[in-house]
Image (cartoon, rainbow, N blue to C red; front, side, top):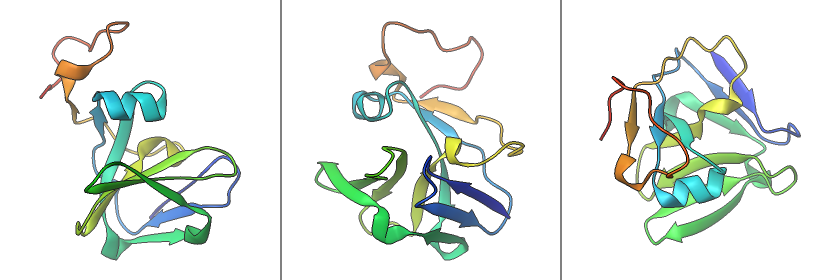
Length: 124
């Protein structure tokens, strides 16, 4: 079991099982929202409990995906495509040790010009 929370603790996420490998998204929207790169783990909703979900504020940067954050402390929490039975949860919410190892980088053509992706890491 893995437990994580936002900075103020109003929202907690509990996942039953070992956390999967996170993915780093370099798309423009994720970089703007997170301040750099959005690293998340894609969790099945059936094994994921969100306590304090009434504290989550949702917004849509695109028509088919909602993004959740804590309006109290500003922590970026979720990326949830409409109709998906999984929810992408910020990898940074979970306390160390997580056992996670970054799987790949996505939307790298959109990455910022101020950093480099380490050579040899999987990219899409």
